[in-house]
Length: 298
Image 1 (cartoon, rainbow, N blue to C red):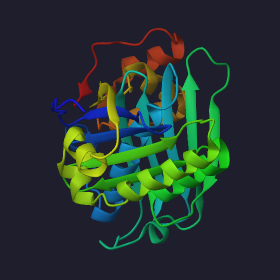
Image 2: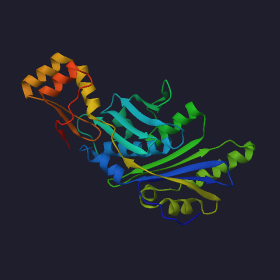
Image 3: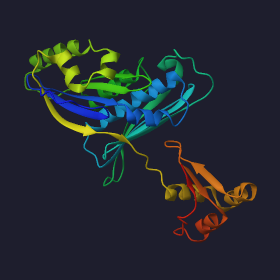
Image 4: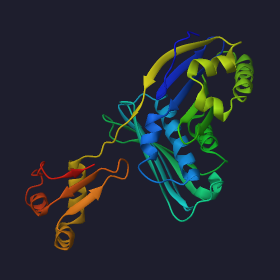
């Protein structure tokens, strides 16, 4: 392996030349910090969200798409929604909704209860998105995603995820087709035994080269492409205007009468969009006439 330093907020792809196995490593610092500061997440909720963020980055790199991959978990538990998306432009955003006081040591099952995890891939040129669904099960986000791959993709996949206040990180291994089934299974077992020794601290602190050497220095690991990741939100004034139009003229005018303006905030990035009476009147008289000089509050 080449000893070139991989900085945070990168995804590193790699492959085993002595086994039909590919892998990915990801570590998010600035991106995770940007997502986390949008709300005052309880530690246990932040833990799930950070793991989902790292997982979305890993999964998005395994599919060919021109659009976005969305992980969305809905449940009847205290955490009713976890949603993360990663685009083909290598941008990430995410959020979680919760209710009530959350114990710091709450488990995933206690937080989510019963529900499902949907994995949606939206391609710009596709008529309909692809979606796979798995029930909330297992003890971790990683286990739930592994069950999805086992059921939907029929592809042997092993995922390790970790998060703390500063960093969200992950490692993923996937078995590729091979003409020698017996050797194939032996290689998969051997490399996973090595990977199982990884610790949360290593996922969060070590760069890709250091971690892969620590785990697989006796294997033939070759680094492939590196992807830079960053936070970005796709909200816009036009999309908020469309939301106001869905409210209907009467409800929008009632809000104007009460407050003097209509204001909506993006749940992902906390950007506030404000529409005054002239803006709102324009929305319902001419759908294309949106005043661009009204306040957008950051």
